[in-house]
Length: 171
Image (cartoon, rainbow, N blue to C red; front, side, top):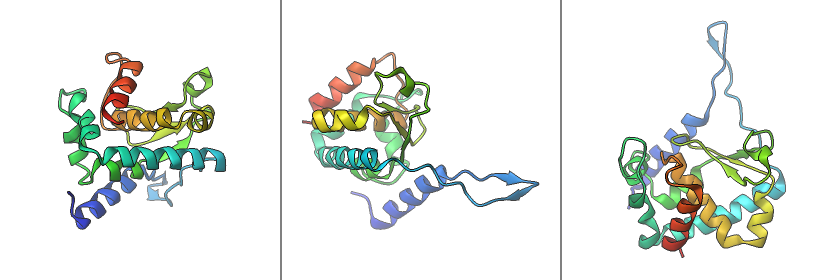
């Protein structure tokens, strides 16, 4: 269990990693704020994220952090430990951003998009529908994307393999 100060440090580090400082003539400008999700997408993400956090409190679900490795072959638990927060706390801290213009979201069959090792997730237009119609799947998808933010690549393992493993561990 993480100490309160460790959690605060982790949250501060995560927040700092999302700020983009724009340099104008050598001087730093105000940090740009990430665009906000629509009310529908925000509500869907919060419901799925809350469910994912609840699942991640279960020791069996936390085993997904050992099941998968980052690009350097380390268990994802090691990447999480760098944040000094629990998996449930970490999933609550990840920013979810509008993905309407993201090239993968434009394909139409993608619901969430992330890049291995970057702590952010893009929300495609289909996610809210998935969350309402299949809330358990939406929670597994949030955990799946969390794993990517901790460094998990894809192909291999395939996206389907990742989600199935999450669903088996995080019932």
